[in-house]
Length: 218
Length: 351
Image (cartoon, rainbow over all chains, first blue to last red):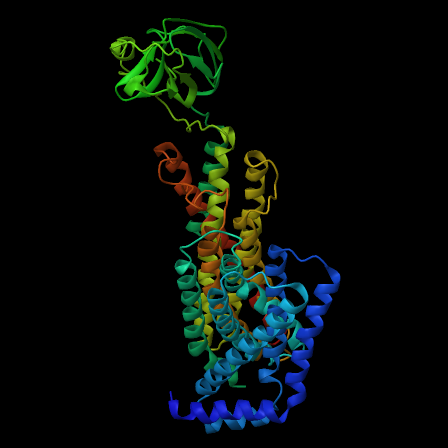
C-alpha cells in the first residue's frame, strides 16, 4: 500500500467538508434536534436512561454522518481517485477522517445533552476514552458498510439494516464502559472490556483492508 | 447416496433413543429440609423414577452425607410406596470440624436402580450450645461405600431439568449445524470473490439460507427448554437476544443480495458482507454473552454442557445426533442449490 498518498487524501476529505459546509451543519443540527427531542420526550432523565439515550443519539448521528462518505461525490470522480491513489489508502483516509468527525460530533452531543439533561459523568477521563474508542469503532464499521450500501439505490435503509447487527457488540461494550464511567456499576477491571473493544476493532479493520478491493471495482 | 441414508438412520436413532430411554433414579426433595443436632428426625424422601417398594436381593441403604469422612446412616426406614421413603435419623450433638451449620447431601442406594444423590438435601444446625468433647461415632460408623451402579441404558437424572434433558439431542445439534452451514457459506463467499462464477454464489446463499433455518429451529427448541426451566419461553436472556441479532445479520444479507439490478454486483457485495458478518458472529455469540448476566449454560461462569453433565450414555446419543443433523442440513442445502441451478438455467444465468 502506498502510504504517501494518505496525507493528500486526508487533506482532500477536510477540504471537501469545508467546501460543503451545509452537510456538516446539517449533521450538527441533527444532533441538536435529537438531543431536544429526547429531552422533551422524557423530562426527568435518570443516569441509566441518560447513558442509553446518549449512545442512541451518538449512534444515529454517526450513521447519518458516515453514510454520506461515499455518496457525496459522483461515481465517476471516485473512479478517478481509485486510479490516482491506492483504494485502500483512500478508505483508510476516510476511516481516519470519519473517526475525527465522529469524535467531534459525540463531544458536541455530550455538551448539548449535558446542558439540557444534566451531566452524571463521575469519571471524565474514562468517559473521554470511551468516546474516543466509540468514534474509532463506529468509524471503522460504518465506513466499510457505507462503501457497500453506496452501491445500491436505497442506501439509507441498507446502511441501517447492514450496520446495526454488526455494530451491536461494539455498542454494548461502549454502554457498559460508559456506565462504569457514570458509576452505575462498580467494576474496576474494565481493561478487559477495552481490550475486547480493541480486538473487535482490529478484526474489523483487517477485514476492511482485505475486502475493500472487491467492493470499489464495478 | 450413502450419507443421506446415514443422516436418516442417525436422526431416527437419536429420536427413538433420545425420547424412549428412561432417566436414572433420582431424589426430588427431602422433607423436612432442616434438622437440629441431638434429635431424632423423621425425613421423607420423594424419589423420581425410583423403586423403593420393589423387593430386591440386598437392602436399600440411606445416608446423609457431610463430606468424605463424615456420613450418617439412617437408623431405620420404610418405603411408603415406590417414590416415597421415610427414614429416621438420630442427629449427633456435634457437627464435623466444630461447625455451626452443615448441609447434608442425601444418598439412597438401591441394589437394582443404583445410587441417587440430592445435593444439600438437609440443613443441620448445631444450636444446643452444649458441645461434647469428642465427635459422635455415628458420623464415621457407617461410611458410604459399595454403591451400586444402575446396569442398562439410562440418562442421568438432574434436578430442575428432569426429563427435558432429552432436549440436549435436539437443541445443541442445531447450533453445531448452524455453525457448519454458515462456515460453508463463508468458504463459498471467499471462493466467489476469487473466482466469480454463479455456482459459488448459489452455494454461499443456499448454505446461509439453510443455516438460518437451523438457527430458527435452535431458537425454538431453546424456547421449549427455557419455558420449562426458566419459566417463560422468551426471557430476554443475553444469549437469546444475541442469537436473534445474529439471525438479523443473515436476513440483512438476503436483502443486500436482492437490492441490485445486476446479478454479479449483488453477488459480489453480498459475498463481502457475508465474510464481514461471519467475523462479527463470533463476538455476538461468544464474547458479548460472557459480559452480561445470563442463565444459559456456558455464560458468566455457568458450566457449559459437556463437561460433567454429559455422561457416556448421553454421548452415545448426542454425537450421532450432531452428525445426523449436520448431514441433514447439508442435504437440505444441496436440494436448495439444485433448485437454484435449475431456476437459473430457466432464467438464462450462465454457469
